[in-house]
Amino acid sequence: MYPFRMSLSLLFAAVSGTAWAGQVVEVTVFPNQAGVVMEHTATLSAGQGVITVDRLPADLDTAGLRVSARGPDGLMLGTLETRVVHGRDLAHPAEQALTERLQALEDSKRSITDEIRAGEIQLRLVERMGQASPPGETGLDPDQWPRAWRVVGEGALDILRAIQNHEQSLRDVEADIRRIRDELETLQRGRRDTLEARVHYQSPAAGEAVLRLEYRVRHAGWRPIYEARLDTATGELRLVQRAELSQNTGQDWNDVILRLSTARPELGGRLPELQPWYVDVARPTPAPMARRAQEAAMDALMSMAPVPEMKAGEQVADLEAAQFSALYRIAGQVTIPSDNQPHRHALAEHRLEATLSARAVPRLMPHAYLFAETTFEGEAPLPAGQVNLFQDGTLVGQVPLSALQPGSPLRLAFGVDERIGIRYELDRDSRGQEGLIRRQQRLERAYLISVHNAHPRPVDITVLDQLPVARDERIKVELGSRATPPSERDVDGKRGVLAWHQSLEPDARTRIRFAYTLTWPEDVEDIIGLR
Image (cartoon, rainbow, N blue to C red; front, side):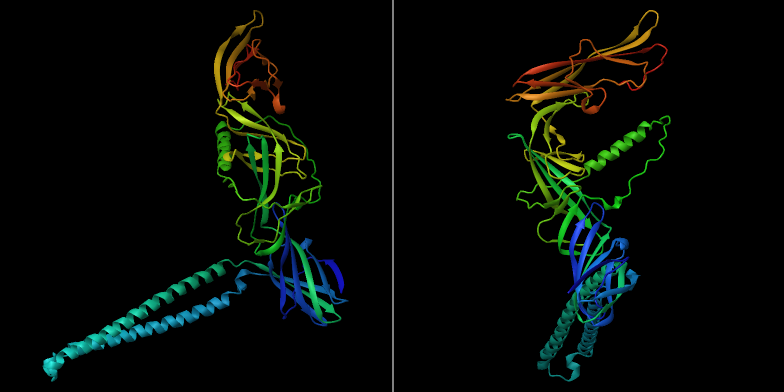
């Protein structure tokens, strides 16, 4: 046996005019395309011949097609010919059988209709015989009149029963005809363009050949979906990683080896080029448009259905590569039809030890949220996706999850902690002028933030608020002299965001005073952005 490998702009094959067996055996799905491996077993004739295969995806990437083969020693591939077969020219394999069945049903319908018409003729004849003349005028003896009536009645009843049976048969046949016509219409409507390839070959001897074809197709892809399941009793955070994939390539993937890759081959090997960077005066977006954009983003987020909890154990995928991009091998053989329907597979489960605390942003919402912090220690990076949050088995929300690298911090806010009370009160709001020579406008505000821990255990809590950030050097912003000193400034790199970290014992209370002052020259008419 002589193995060979070559790259062509197109190459698929099965022996023309001979029986061949071929199917998709391996698929690697990327975020927005798929790499497919097909194997064909063909019978080759000695000498020159033509290998033909049809019903291939019309949109496959012909530039990246590769083919390898095992066959008779000295097997060579030559000239390649390809053409696109339009859907209107392509008959489905089941279409001929359905057409023949439809014709047979039409013939049966015609026969049953003829039987019904013949019965109606017989019935009219019996009716005329019964109405021709009274029995006394036909010469019948009066003793024979009841028998004559009985014969006519029984004959009419037999005919009516036969007509009824034929009508029932006709309804059944018409229902079958409608069903087959619907199936034919579905087949004809679902036709799509396909690719046919013909490649000339030369083989010194007859024999079997196994062709292995590798190509890429569009209309396939997958997206990550995550579940974060927090056990508040143990502090364990289970991060379940799933993939939702679909394909509409025109080829069903039956019992294939399925892999999912985070690589993005569509980006290619070309390094992005920097273009001139222009700076201009900002044109602020009108507020109504900004609100509509924000509402649309929230609607899109809320419309995403959460992943249902699966009670039984799940078989996760094997991580085959993780150095540059992750490659997962789905367990077993997988079938994915070309119907564009979503199919979900478990990729991995990470059990992490989380530190639990409470966080509150009382300026925006008078509630504290359960907060879990941990470090992601997986082998491979996690791509960005949606994460469904479960607290002690209950779905409490859904948020976007940014891409995570191994060793990166993971922080997630779960549901509202009803055992922590928060109050946010305005304590002072004054505005006036100061200075004798160079007068300035002055704004002073102060808030009281009250926190109560109703848990039977100590709780670490972080309260967040923010100072206004001046974009004009004439505006001065200072933390109030009587304000509670914050534990942290510019939290997570966000300018002006302050944090107070405190640990509260059971049934303990605390108060935080937050105050700030703004000053600006008297000749500045107005300050925008103040709440």
